[in-house]
Length: 107
Image (cartoon, rainbow, N blue to C red):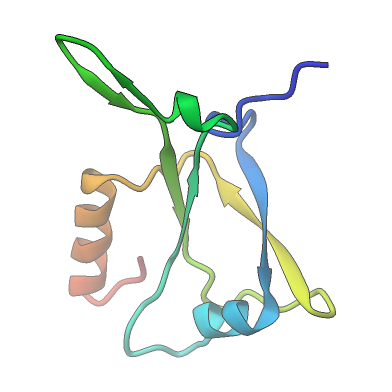
């Protein structure tokens, strides 16, 4: 059986489970300081995290982000949320988030 590479999740989103106490902190509204959840996915094998060559250095991982403001707790101790694979957390995404928040918007 071939398991999918967790660093490249298939589909428009993937599941992530977090403790309800953490979700409550991230989901609190209204907020004066916006919070986002950033999840990093890496290949299962640590040997695949980094590949070096003469012309480049590849770091195999990807971070995704989601704003959980207002998200309800649904589990008894932990809650599973969906993380959109369209929301890659990189330098461009961070600048866009900061711009939105700076003009009074949400991340």
